[in-house]
Image (cartoon, rainbow, N blue to C red; front, top):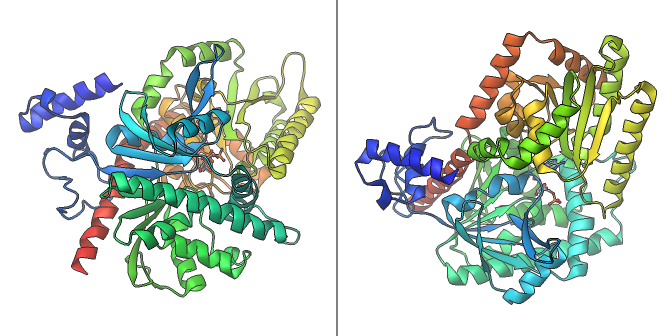
Length: 549
Ligand code: ADP
Ligand code: F6P
């Protein structure tokens, strides 16, 4: 991939600047490519501190970034021979952000999650280690080995069953949540403590790179920016929230002290980013309603504690080259062969973590209603559900996995005939199998209750080879971008989803092709590089405004 990109970029550079490509770094060449693609946002005014030049192919300095996220780009384990191996981190955040290290000088701070991660952290004695990305790009990884009890409270009590549930509207408020002493404890001795440990790691990395921009990610780290700001008032801080941001009243479920601390923590950044205009506008309203901050909704700025914070929205994306390469890799081709050997006439697909926000049980119910209404499709169609088991220490997640298995079994027992089982449920982390299925689906169902974005829809559109149709929940962030070419569904309306399955399976061939080509083209033009560019442009805009006072 790298060779191809360097060659392609090198040709452009020869064309554009007459410089010998051998003298240019890969990032410089990529910047040259970037000026040729449609901009996601206005080019920033020239900024002496960040000399990105959008108007000609001048060399671009790699930025120094300190990236901070709970889950890192890799997690360590041991292979069959007992050798240490670096495995791909799970979930959308790491799929997307792993490419950051190809473009910038990155120091990445993440939690030590596996036992092997903790060993790596111990061997590094609180320092960062050298790591290499898939293309050989070097970066530094700082694994923070948290106090285990604090981390358990942070991850298994506050971040996931509380913040994640609140931000995805998953609670039936008549009965949940019940914020008992344990929850207060988990906030104080879990969430606050782990954020403190992250902030300390950031301060340690800033000792090595005092001019770096700190780029926080997601709901695990709402408090860390304020803690860093208190020690380093002039450091450039940005935060990207990868999940939905609900309306202010939803935040009122949390005690006043906690909801204020969350908003105040985020507003210690210079820039706060969301995937969609919808989540961004909820955050602006929350800052106003819950903190009493002065908000300019037109400019998207919040005045808080004497500082102006810029609030933006840019949907994240993936690296299309990575998926092009994956699609023809040995592992994916082998998985595809296995899939083709048992392929039904029509393949419906869903790919998700086993998370209640993904709405898997209602998806099976919709398929059941579809099979009821269309007996002619029985034995001809299969719903393949490739599900990555997620957060199984948390009772709500373990119960949800049980519900998924029960509901798939119920549909199968009702309809199965001979060798045909309508739902093919595969619960495992299998990225190669996932990409193979992306190539082969006729219909992809993404019916999330709420979802910050949903990268599955973008990944699948990129590599599909059967003019597959996307069905998208109107509450998934990706709907804001891809809905012109997808079928939209209300995630609660299972009858509507059954109708959408029928419509998707009967769309004329030409229309299916046009929709898929347009969706894939959109993802290619709005790729991860464009997203990074948009983030940095926001930052430059903010820096220029800051200088103007
Ligand atoms: P989230 O971040 O909530 O997990 P996304 O849809 O944005 O949701 O991202 C999910 C990521 O996890 C995608 O990159 C997808 O390819 C990957 N993934 C989902 N299910 C599986 C699975 N069963 N095996 C391997 N990878 C998976
Ligand atoms: O993008 C949402 C997200 O929660 C990430 O922050 C996270 O890393 C990923 O999904 C997977 O969740 P987890 O890290 O809890 O396995």
